Amino acid sequence: MDFPTNALRVASATIALCAAIALSSCSSSGPKPVIALSEAKTAVDQADRAGTRNYAAFDLTMAQDKLKKAEKEMKEGDYKEARYLADEAKVDAQLALAKTLKAKTKEAETQLMQSMHSLKHEINNQGSGMQ
Image: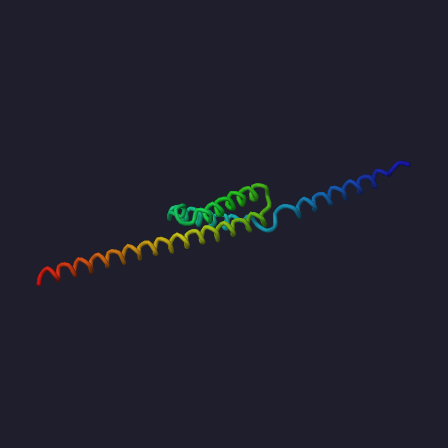
């Protein structure tokens, strides 16, 4: 039994349409996440410049890894996943920066307290020597 040419064309077109729908649902969802990637990259760079490797290296590494994955997903056309990973990278970088600033503040506080203690000690020694 031979299929009529029109039926074959309709079947081929239907199969092609189904394949196109299936492929499109796997890839992009919405516009390219250019802004999300840019914000994530800026946050990662800022955290790196702030010295987070000394205070929050794990969080910085997580942010960098997620940013790389986001860039890969964008190139592959999975914009939804790229946007999600970029947002996570940005938050991880912000966390690394916050931990770093907290640690640096604590160090500065400790140094200030030590300086004040030394100054008080010096003042007390000068006061007792004047008598």
